[in-house]
Length: 432
Image 1 (cartoon, helix red, strand yellow):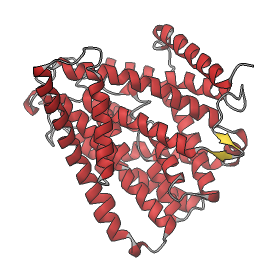
Image 2 (spheres, helix red, strand yellow; image 1 turned 180 degrees about the vertical axis):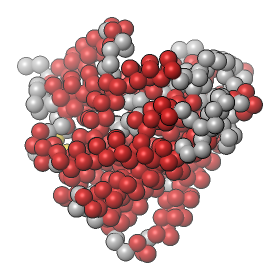
Image 3 (cartoon, rainbow, N blue to C red; image 1 turned 90 degrees about the horizontal axis):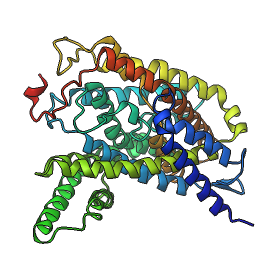
């Protein structure tokens, strides 16, 4: 009898071959690769061949899911940082600041209100639900993100930088929800949350991202002058930068996701040879795509019909409100008075604002935060409720955003895109 593991390898290899050879046709369809992976994952799960099983004796292996999604996210946020060549000036990053400082808290608070008053949750559970579903996904959003370091389109830049940052900056709110679950007297832990989970973790994440990335680049350049590294091994510098930055930041209780994103920005700007970060980006993107396959296969394999139906009405309420009201309205509020950097218009075109509102893709980041919450106090009926609402929301996002991404972005590029200039700007003046 053939081992199930061997069959899994065969099916995954066959899937990779099919999507690779068929990518020329798939990219022309209103269909994302993630939808294909999701369908195959369902086929490999309990309703299909039963070849992938994260549940044993009704116990879900959340630790495995947490570690896999953690690895995917840190590679993806580094990739986001490498894609961005815009000057690190507030005026240039205005859209990102608006999406993080205004939109993300609006999304978390709105979803928390829904959880509290419509889903029967207490405030701790409701805030945790909002924090889990608030981050947009840097993994599944490649259709709408910057296509290269030379791409200067502001919609793509905003979605890329938002995806790279809010996967890290949702963490304080996840901790807030977990603290509230353990102790409903907020006064017992609120000061610690402010000083440690908010101020220290964010500040140390930024500082560590800068220091570690600059140190690695400096060491590499010194050694390369004396004896160049093997060409085949050189791109592994990117992976080492990701892992070292993340681990050292976590050791000092900083946000590793944030540090790795900052490290990507630093690496992009630290090499005299502009081709070096581009080569690293291409290498990292290949690993990211491979890990995306595994993650979405796992998501498909853990879906169960009965609990999905049990929480179907709650999930539909969250999905409709999040996709059609909370995110679009939050974007509209956040971009009031926002002027495009490379246009004479005084405000964003309404079509651009609508696309910012629509492309709030949920995915691997939400899976990670859910798995993390499972391991840090989220249990019982609340865990089941939040889990199945999250799974269903991600599946809905994979489907509706995956189908709509290609036609909507083609429509945007025909009518509103401003990335005609493919030369990377180096100062804010070149944007104005």
